[in-house]
Image (tube, rainbow, N blue to C red; front, side, top):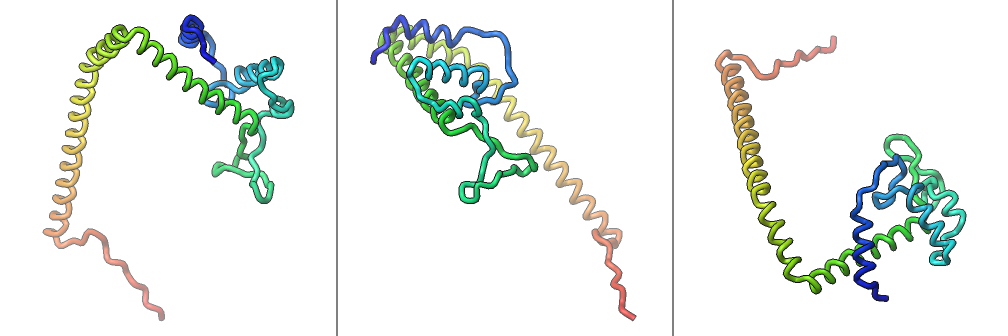
Length: 182
């Protein structure tokens, strides 16, 4: 199925438009499960585009269980481990794959349909980014030089301290007294 260029452009514009609000929802592929994925998959089920089981939509987050013993698994922090149920997770992965294909198709369409405009945007981006990259490289070189200087000073201080102990006839670590059994 080929999507007309006008629809692709409208879809891409709608993706890029700013939307207010931020949720504290469980994220799947960086998108809210309860606020986006579940309503979307309920709609796709209603439209007959998907057949996600109702229990998966009704209880999409489940306790993670050991595959052999079916016992509840716990994380290193002592909390029970949770996971998104497979039918929902699989549909999200399919949506992700399709989204990537859409992005690549749109990019290809613009590259072929407007090659000079695309090339100009690439050139503008390189030119605009060059001073930022140069500044970052210089800042990184300065930071590395400061770290190396601090390390050298620390090593010199440690060597001076070791020499001072040695010249005073002291050991770096005190002798341990060994108690003799009586």
